[in-house]
Amino acid sequence: MIEVIEVEKRFGRKQILKGVSFTANKGEITCLIGINGVGKTTILNAIMALTPINNGQILIDGKPLDKHSFEKITFIPDAITMLPQMKIVEAMEFMNDFYTCWNQKRATEILGFFRLNLNDRISSLSKGNTAKVNLLLGLALDVDYVLMDEPFSGIDMFSREEIANVFTSHLIENRGVIITTHEVGDIEHLIDKVVLLDNGVVTKEFSAEEKRENEGKSVIDVMREVYQR
Ligand SMILES: Nc1ncnc2c1ncn2[C@@H]1O[C@H](COP(=O)(O)OP(=O)(O)OP(=O)(O)O)[C@@H](O)[C@H]1O
Image (cartoon, rainbow, N blue to C red; front, top):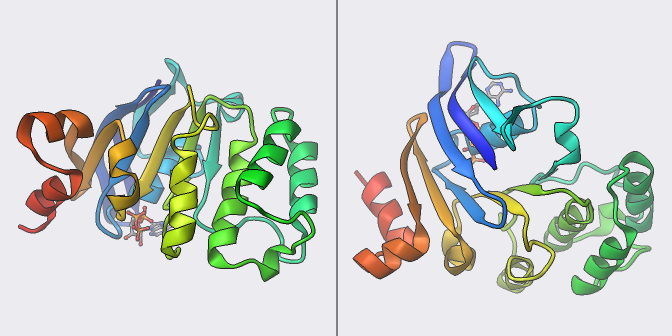
């Protein structure tokens, strides 16, 4: 389980996170939702220890972040981190050299899943294929938790459908996934838990299925209630 406990984060004098708490379980998809600038990416960066927090605690399987946390989590950012002149195959080789938990068999499977070509250069990829390469590089790591920052952002509906298919595949099975988005429509039916952020805190944390079954409300209905004040 990933536990985010009363996390506070300031950039200069601007307090972005004012005591954010939520949990994300293994085998579940937890969706962090909030309007632009609310601090979704900052939370993912904090979980990866890429940004220091001012207060609070983050635990992975009950333990504070340390140098071994990286063997448990992968972060799939919304922009490519590989050099533009690299071919996809070279990006995969780089990951293989760098990470002991790289799973080549899984990488080859994802390559086929997304119909990507090994010899295509990163710089030549469409936005949709860039997102798919990011997913390939992240999901081919054998780790328990996957953080995804805005995987659907700016991508056409066909690529969105293909990416959404990942969430029902064995590529995700048994892993704990935290995804940030403000375009919840594509995966609403796949999300286990929704964490709504507003004004630096978690305003609602709920099961999407229970909300639908007990109150007849979709995630988008709840978002409207929270954000259209
Ligand atoms: N390194 C930084 N230095 C200063 N301010 C920052 C830094 N990183 C983020 N911020 C600010 O913190 C706030 C939250 O940023 P963050 O990227 O976490 O939001 P977000 O919810 O992911 O937004 P979006 O949906 O637009 O991606 C923003 O106001 C942003 O400008």
